[in-house]
Amino acid sequence: MVPPGSRQALTVPPENTLGEVAASDPVRLPDLVTVFAKRAERLRALAPGHELEGFLRLIATLIEAQHAALAGLPAGSLPAHGEGPPLDPTTCQRDGTWRVALARILERLDAASLPEAARAAQAALAEASTDRLEALADRFLGGDVAAGEAAQAVFVAAALQVAWTRMAALLDAAQLDPADSGQCPACGSPPVAGVVAPGGTKFGHRHLHCSLCATAWRYVRTRCAHCGSTDKISFRQLAGASYLRAECCEACHGYSKVFYLESARAIEPLADDLGSLGLDVLVGEEGFSRVANPFVLGVMGESRGNN
Ligand SMILES: [Zn+2]
Ligand SMILES: [Zn+2]
Image (cartoon, rainbow, N blue to C red; front, side, top):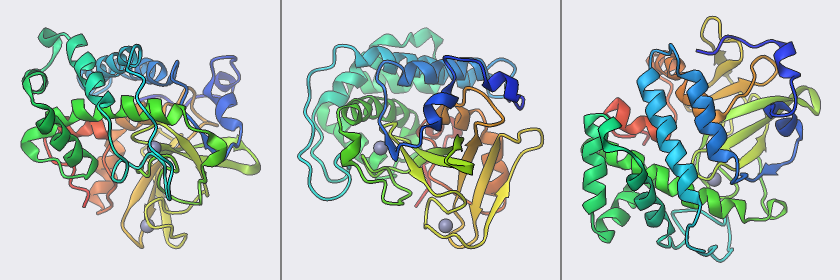
């Protein structure tokens, strides 16, 4: 775990996330040069001594492969913009870019360094037909991954993230409406976590961060990201981790994580979510649930189980 940071640590320029996030843009699109690189770097920083050290290092390696896969992707195309989020994977036609990304990720990973389940998944995916890959992608995006294919779904998720993040980077943020919604204005996916940064009001702004395309959008604080309720919201936190809370909703029994930039440095929402799975266990025992981080699928050995 990351020890709670100090304000002093937060003042160190220029690589600090604080400055970037403090800007209260309604929608922030991903920066392809840094999005995966920073995520992998954050996981490498979180890993030493962590109880899930091997897992965090494995996912860091996978994210480094995502970063490498971005270079040299085919040109691809943006879907026609109709109603709703322009990159909604359940409504827009998917081109083959994500399969190119998958092949590049699979090639880059050294089989000898992978745990058995991941190695078997890597081999199976490398042999899989286009139809089977597309069916796997559909099941992942539909939250319908079977237990036996969870490890494969992690690689599929990684490849879809590459393709969707690249498309999101090509959008015009001014055309996207955060609409006070708990779902990504670019692609309609659920957030992986929220980050509260100082600025605006004395309480700061919250941005939710998309689990698929890495777009961030502003969302009211102390409001359920699942059902929009502002009643009966309560918070849970782990001892010694004041920079992180679970925002729990009694109305729908959903929860989401909120990271506070005031008290910790260099937060990367997807990486820090993986680095704080102990909080998920705690609130899960109380009966609250969320859409799992895509990379948790294979490790927990369970289906996504979110519907
Ligand atoms: Zn998105
Ligand atoms: Zn709710």
